[in-house]
Amino acid sequence: MRKKVLIGGLGITVAASAAAILLAPEQSTDAAAPVQHQPQIVHTAESPLFNGLPVRRAIGPSTGELFSSPPPPKPAAAIGAPGRVAPPAPPSAPAMPYRVAGKVAHDGVAKVVLAKGDRVFTVEPGDRLEEGYRVEAITADEVALVYEPLGTRELLALGTPGIALPTPSAPAAAGGSGRPAQLRWEGPPRVKTGSVFNVTLKVTSDEPVRGAPLSVNYDPKLLEPIAVRPGKFFGADASFSYRIDPSGAIMVNAAGSAGAATDADLVILSFKTVRASAAAEVRLAALQLQRGAGAPLPNEPISAFSTAITP
Image 1 (tube, rainbow, N blue to C red):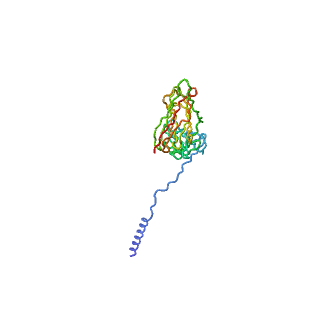
Image 2 (image 1 turned 135 degrees about the vertical axis):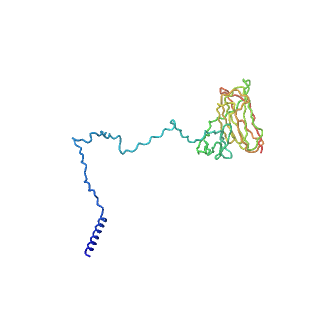
Image 3 (image 1 turned 90 degrees about the vertical axis):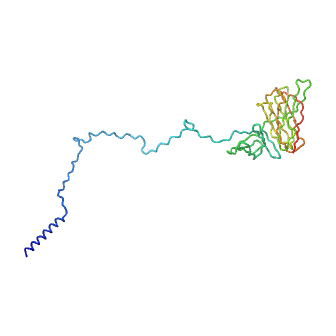
């Protein structure tokens, strides 16, 4: 019995030892290698380390300020330089197409006669013209026109050179050399109320005519002067001026390098009819034809021009 107990205890002891061995942590069989430090290399005169390295170039001097502002941008190329298109010019009013042909007063209202080429216009403040112009104001010395697309203002002077009234021409002296100049009116015998018509003073002369200051009378109750123009007799280089008196007179001074005349246009008067009348007259009050040297040239008397104004 005792022997069985010893054998059993021994078995238990062996089993416990085996279990302890199995459950114990695994131990490394390699011993820890000792840490070996590399020997420190020291640069000495006997053992230089950097003789074999290339020589590094030293940093050169600074070429500018370290913290300076960037340079300003280059200016743009000038306008008109090659390769650049110049900007379009600002808009401007066209060349003034009108010129002052005279000034009249009708029913107490001042009006100006403007000419554009061969056309004439009687205008007053507020009237709109061709080419975009508007009559802004009329004073004693000038008329103001506004070019409405741009709002620009232009002034046209009304002043004209002084015109001396001529004296009536003396009749031809007996036995004089050459016959007196012949004059005649040309115009419509009948016109309607409110219409515009022309009356032309024509001349025929054997001698050259250099100048023709004259004065014409009309009835302002029946006729309103619209324009006064030189005839083709004096040519493009004519010196021409006139003045209109609203009370019923027109003074003209015309001169040029003209020659002999055969039924040539001397002066052209434009009138607008005011009201109906059996006879509206235009009368030559004074005329002084002048020869080439400035001496008076006699002329035959001339009757008044008359036209009927119908409703």
